[in-house]
Image (cartoon, rainbow, N blue to C red; front, side, top):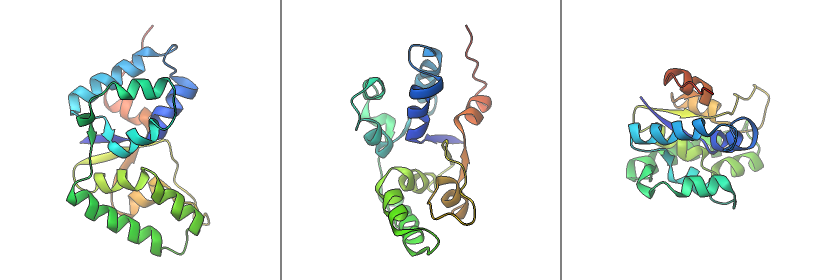
Length: 162
């Protein structure tokens, strides 16, 4: 299995618990992880991260573009399926549908649908009454596995030692 990282994995790590100065080992592991699976995530996630002019933008910009999966015809076809499902689902509010579809999230799911991928995200599944569109809910609809970065670190047997 290969893993597609959501932008919130990088952003939360940088802003909260694995800042570049406090936990450089986390960022080193992501670099090794990228070499092992030959990519880091999808192009749309890279685009979201580079919207802000900060240390994370500098870090991710050091990776060659071929480390980010670009949507081919198969991914675009799956994206249409995801878009149709979200658009036609009355559970979600129009505002939440538009926001979800304007970001990298549906592209992560569409890409995962094309192969042996899991989406790595910090998003939690939304409850039955919510109008929000969340990666875990849509992933389940399309039988896409999703895990947290901490799950991935356990799978990869990552140990950040001092």
